[in-house]
Length: 307
Image (cartoon, rainbow, N blue to C red; front, top):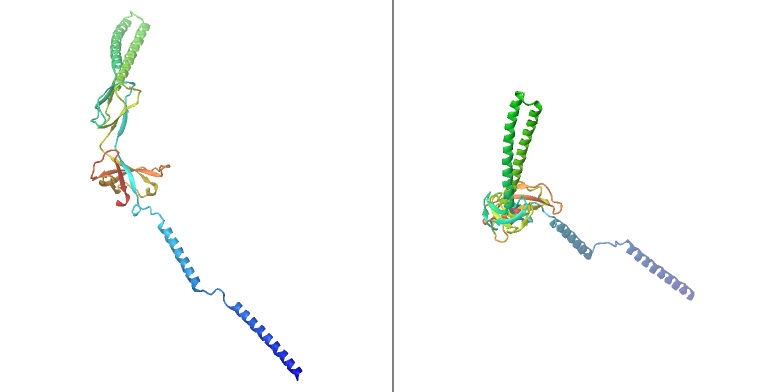
């Protein structure tokens, strides 16, 4: 009886061990079969934040794109300056010492007005000598022509031979050439004398004096500067981004950033060449209805968006 109970107890213990082992195995297999990447609340929130960041980057890229149209709100104001139609630094056509300067900086002058002169004593003497030489050559030519007529008549009468006549013809030609040389020399001396005086090439304003009375000037050295005050033009260097948008006849607003004076600029000329160093091209415009006073050198700004 005790032996049977002992066998039954051993059997129950074995059954219990088997049952426990089966439960653990089943539990392990359940864990393996469950999905491990199911979405949870934290994962969803993280994904949402990533999407927001991506949208912001795309938006920033769009906003950083530069609009180069002249109609754009971001179109800049282009600096420009007023230029005279003509502005010249002029000097004498010969060398010499300045004897007189008849104008001052700021004076208005008319075309052909005498502005300055060099000491001309020697030049005047040279001209007078050249004039006397011309008169002498004319007299010699007249005498030679009379002699030629006499020798020609004598040759017809058989008094002189043909060789003598030909020699007198040669002498006459030489006298003609001598007169022409003397006349050319006179013109040269008169040109030098005239070059001792400096005249205004056009009407305008004396904008600068480079030399004073008593200064020695070499040929072509500037003595003063004259500026023409009519037909003033607005000059600007436009960025290359607007090259294809600039056309003759376009209207833009111009403003003086200091005084606030305004006007309208009408493009008159476009230089179709790009400056490689500044990446700009030159534009010339006429300013109309300007509320202030335009003078050469005035600084203005072109408002591209006002066309």
